[in-house]
Every structure is written in C-alpha cells, then in structure tokens.
Length: 241
Image: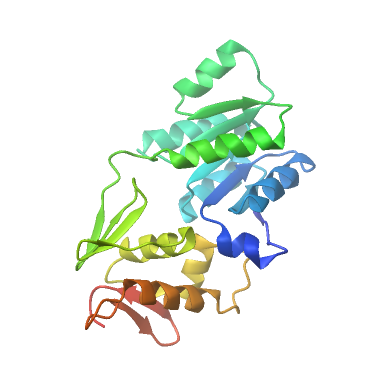
C-alpha cells in the first residue's frame, strides 16, 4: 500500500519542487528516507513492494525513484529494466545492501543512474538526489508550446513571446502538467496528486492559489494568461476558453 508523506509544515510542500518515489520494504527505514527527502522540499511517496511500485510509476509522474533491490515480491532491478524497456527516462537511484562491484555494474547496466549502498548517511543521499535532479532526465524531452508560451523541461525555463518568465519550481511543475495536456480539462485533484502528493488535503485551495500566481506571472499587456477555469472541475490551457 502506498504511504505518502504529509508535510507537517506547509513550507515543505509549497517550496518543494519535484516528486519522488521511494521503494523500500524495511518499515523502519522507509519512513526515515521519506521524511528526509520531504524535509529537503520534495513530495515523496513510499511503496514497500515491487507490485506497488509498478502501479505507482504508471499512475503518477515521478522525477526520481529511490529503489531498493531486495523486495518481498521481486527484485527492484525488474522495475528499472521495465522503465528503460518502455523508454521511460525517470531517474533511478538504487539504494541497496548489495555492495560488490558486480552488483553495482549489474545495476548500472540495467539502467540505473546512480548506486548507493547501505548503510548510508542521509546527507549523502540528499546530495545524490539533488545531483540527479539537476541532470536532464531525457535529452530528447521535447519543449512544449501553447500559443506563445514555450516550456523547456531540460533547462527548466519558461518564456512567453520570447520573454523569460521566472517561476518557482511548483509553478513550473503546474504549468508543465497543464501544457502536457493542452486542450484538456485537468481536475484539481489530478494537479494535487501530480505536483504535491496523493495525501495532500484535497479541500485546500493550494491549487487555486498557485494557478492564480502562475496566471499573474504569465500575463502580458493586453494579453491575459491563457489558463482557463472550468468551474467546479479544474483548469485548461489552450483549446476553447
């Protein structure tokens, strides 16, 4: 069953930038990793099984997976190979007690981006996560364009009519999610789960507040931001207003 960290301080959630999946069957270690990464400012989901991890990776969009290998229902390398087999460039950091050179070579050959052995120090894990998240997940990741708005996932930049628009990481993630579904109505609940985490308070107006900020930053003289509200449902960029 998926366990999702709920930030005790809203600053963790509001200032966080990316969503991470932790796959770890140890019930004492999993929450420690989850909390540590959440305190670094990320939305973090925790799965204890290979099956749960597979389902989470299909349903949600993760920027990074911290993956144990010895899981109750299989080897974590299976998930890594499956991701690469379907051309999924999600970053994968293997976190495991397997510490031989052969194990590391096998893991990296299976498509992992990094390999950290247990026992480990949380600051090192956090540093490796930061390094991986600075790395483009896929150099082929295309730029998105809706009207005169251009979003470049690789450089993490947004421009409108050629003018750079500075966004927070959360605003960037919101805009990316909307532009990737241009013309579609995106429910607030989908945005909460994709940009925050699955356990964030669905009654909160956090999505509306961030979309309002995003609109304000994208506005130009005589040209409002093309993010429409579908009353009672969610938001849409592009298509009919």
